[in-house]
Length: 141
Image 1 (cartoon, helix red, strand yellow):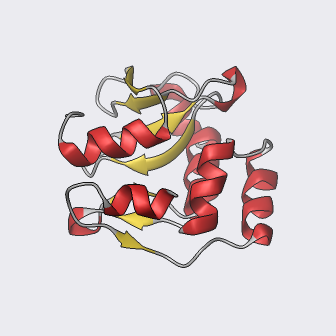
Image 2: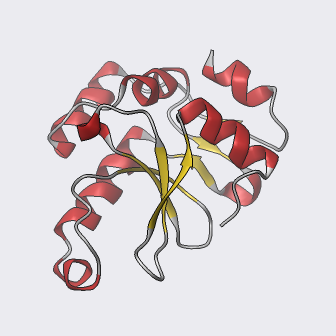
Image 3: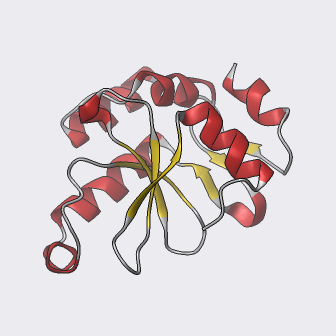
């Protein structure tokens, strides 16, 4: 479903081989919570999707774990920004800004985190709309 959805959208997309269940479990364990169902389903089809110029349209399970752990544990970042613990970053905009879900709320909404002013802005009602709107240019950062 996910690869078909992205393939039908404008712009290039490079799909990676599917994530293994062990990789998804390792990611969830590292994060301390399960991945949202839609994100896990997408990763089962493609363990990361690269957009134009190699941008991280969807990160791999390994990168999701690594990036979130770094952001949550870095003491310097903790002094500069609001806590990242509620956010689950899964992609980047290519300009330093990141896209995130809020799995603790049980809502599928996607937010953009602005690295310059630490704002967190709603950008899409779910992962599918994020992909559609980001690739079609409706989301601009």
